[in-house]
Amino acid sequence: MLKIGDKIIHNRLFTGTGKYNNHQTMRQAIEQSNTEVVTVALRRVDLSGDDTYILNDIPEYIQLMPNTSGARTAEEAVRIARLAKASGLGDWIKIEVIPDHKYLLPDNEETLKATEILVKEGFVVLPYMTPDLMAGKRMEQAGAAAIMPLGSPIGSNRGIRMKEMIRIMIDEIEAPIIVDAGIGKPSEAAEAMEMGADAVLVNTAIATARNPVEMARAFDFAVQAGRIAYESGISSASLQANASSPLTGFLTK
Amino acid sequence: MSFYEQCQHLQSHITEEMFREVTAADVQLVLAKDRITAEDYFTLLSPAAEPFLEQMAQKAHQYTVQHYGKTMQLFLPLYVSDYCVNTCKYCSFSIDHVFPRRKLTLEEIEKEAQMIAAKGIQDIILLSGESKLHSSVSYLQETMEVLRHYFSSVGIEIQPLDTNEYEQLVQSGIDSLTVYQEVYNEDVYRDIHVKGPKRHFKYRLDTPERGCQAGMRSVNIGALLGLDDWRKESFITGMHAHYLQNRYLETAISVSFPRIRPNAGSFQPKVEVADLHLVQAMVAFRLFMPRAGITMSTREHPTFRDQIIPLGVTKMSAESSTEVGGYAHPQETQSQFEISDDRSVQDIQRLLRQKGYQPIMKDWQITS
Image (cartoon, rainbow over the protein chains, first blue to last red):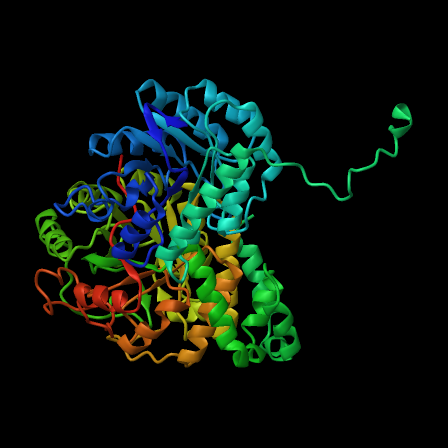
């Protein structure tokens, strides 16, 4: 069972709202993915008009996870988070502090600062971070509801390049680990789930697929398959048959 | 150290001959790569790359969709003043041109803002002629107090300022800076910028860097294509963007590829930049800097603008007025240059949707 804040999440695929070519496709993809949590950049939400833009196109049962995309410092992230809450987008916040326009890599130090401040203010905080055990542990201690390490640079579709670091984080951190960014194919989402990740967040790979709605379904299946496999206990791979015991066989002779 | 030294070095070392020496085999090698170097970028701007334009365009399209999705940001310019202290051979706002000059009052700015906001636009750029007296920092700060109620992102394209002046503007909520070098060839630059502070080549060249240092969220640069060899000018523009992005990771660097438009003077471009070459400049830059923004203005003709949407453009203007007060009272004053594409914001939105693109009206939130 995956619990974030006081909410129980049944489907371990989280999705996004960026990069779709229209909102109807986005809505259908969200529905077909069976996702329950969707992240949305506050910078894209029109807070002034009657038409709340993107929000109208997200099904009502969805748990919104506003993100602080565009923030370059903890201070900016905190301001965006407060604005999101004040605008009625709820108290979940995915912290993105990205002071790097070349690779779009997050700043763990500033992210930790923002986490500390926002947890104290009562937010359900989900920090997006570069996989690092100590940084992850500090975010957990600060009260993060889940930790979101990147699989590869955002939008790169390169798969789980940070595999070893994420594996260590899964083993050592009790808060849920949600692999975010870099997942390009359903098989890579399954791979993250088989490793024991609690959930994955996929946006680019769905939104920019030729058929985003079908791709959303594919990711749903892959995440479920990966999770079932993890829970069923994956037997370890071996290159040779294990029938004989060439080194210790003499003990039983 | 500033980009000036690098620019001088490039100016003195790059010749048209070097572009001609590039072979088809060189281009093919570059196209097989994932990440390309400055030398590779140079190769893609050569005549030898022209037969590979479709392949380059496919790759440019793929990179752009990967990083931006099928989306297009829309913005409008807001001209607040046409007072200018410079004499530039190619610009209608030049001090030598006699026409009644205007600077909008705060009430007039509010009217313009209302007209623009009513079109659904949330992202604007404040433009003025270059005059520290008329488009002063305090005037822009006051303007910003009005505009913050209407828009989610406000940029400036005005005379170059000092770093501390940019800092004051950033504090007031202005988040982006556009400043075109016009031409990176210093000799040509001195020839066409006849009088005024704009003659100071290095001060202008260092302007984008001062904007980065002052904390602008995005900085947009460009060369006015047609003033000198477009291959060399495009290459140095790309190198300038690369220089800035490497030093200022926090700032989103973007590039425009403006071509000279008819204006109130009789200036004729030195170099004809064909559509093919503008496309080559754009897609080569996209392959060199896959994440950078590319902005396209209404200077270009509708049919051409429609075709280049998938080639790497991330932001475009629509229904622009280039005259002061032109949204509330069109056609009453001198425009800075003639626009080619006068379709409405709604027309452009419809066009984008037809092409499978989502128009993005808002991409930032003023929180200060």
